[in-house]
Image (cartoon, rainbow, N blue to C red):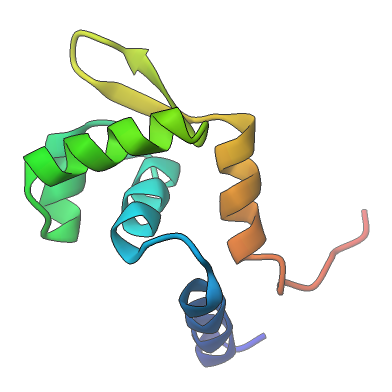
Length: 96
């Protein structure tokens, strides 16, 4: 699969998803290893307060878990991992 094919398929998948865009961006940021609202805000252009609010909503929905209450660090739950994996299920399956 060429990079342009990958990008177009991913963008189409994201556009068709029912999750609000801001929530999706925060979820993908956590999946990419950005655990805290200030880090997510710097990468997404949202405010830290908005990221904190979205992280709270994602926790209530079961997509993320706060694993560091002091610093506000987050990780994906099994449900969050499944959601993110669903964005990429257009990828061809490789057999071992």
